[in-house]
Image (cartoon, rainbow, N blue to C red; front, top):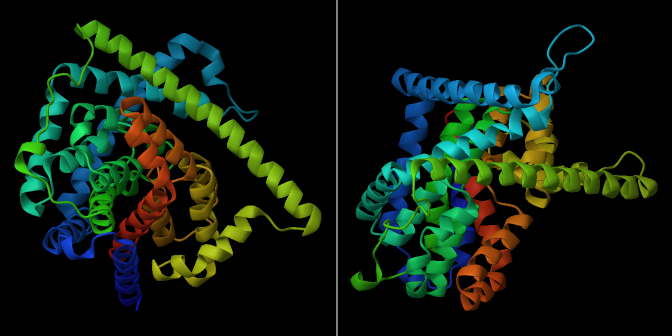
Length: 403
């Protein structure tokens, strides 16, 4: 029965995207079918085969080793401040030290790999392969893969030399990929809060979901001369050590930005809840969102007694950001309050940038590259969020089919 409801959810998501489409005659159904097959095959491989689970474990071990190295750097700078203990002698968890500051080390690694042209080449040829098997333009495919490694702003900046070729529909697809993705620099932070297998599988799932929904809502046909990818100037660093410095500074900015946003969003959430509770005792915004999104959670395969909790986490992510929702989910996981299937489905849903604040980030980035196209992104900002959220639902539903 869960499988039938899951398939119904997939059909519903694709149906909504079809109704939202601004050019239904040119939808690339073959490419969409190929990407859905890839999603199903990828999820089945990593969740249900011994080899797939071994690969996930190995990748996770690699990330955990990098996190360990990062904590070494944090510990050296902050000393006992970062290693405080509880009254019973157990280590205390300080989110800023244990999670956010690790971003600095991951951003440094990404910057160095970019400077050495290792990462750009990998991204370019994976993007070319996706373009070949799906028939999608190279720029959109490259951007989708690029968005798996870099943040929203960085991914869009990497294709700025192609921006004058981008029509409104193409601009929608690259923006959807940026919003539906996550940055590899903060994957380490996610792994500090959620089970690694769901976070790591969510990354390729969300890449394909963004392309599927984007190419349905805004189909494109591109001339060959307007479809090329240039990776010559992806790194502004002039030396290896400058790349390290740039990465460290960028990582520090990201950590501080996330910390500032968490302070603002969590404080604002508490304020909103206090206002709601002054009128309706015991009611919170999360509870309201939980009931609103419970039907969607039901179709995604969430057990009946956990629908409101799952819907609450999903809604919290949309109106605030993924970190706020992940912190709430982490608390529920630690208390064993949710089933493994709910944890998996919700974790995949949360592993993306699809929230209201991302509209401003993407529009601002595009505005800096091309003011005219920035105005275009602002106009379809809400449609962009709906498409990216549908992508998160699609990814989470597919994950749920194999849990």
